[in-house]
Length: 84
Image 1 (spheres, rainbow, N blue to C red):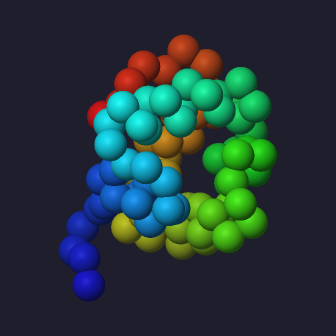
Image 2: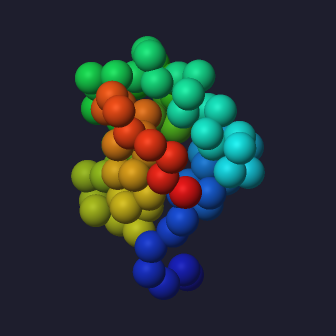
């Protein structure tokens, strides 16, 4: 079991996405227009399994909640800078 909170790169690994810093930046920049103004799990960029994972992690305030909140800030809100 992992103690504490996970990093954003680990969240991308968990979601099955490339997790190098540049890959995360590219993902955010590519998907921000379609995600703006939505709750993170409701953004149309996720598979159903990814959306469920994000929704459950946030609702449970699990170890994954903090990187999910960081991702929500970067992806779903305008004007956010790189957060790595």
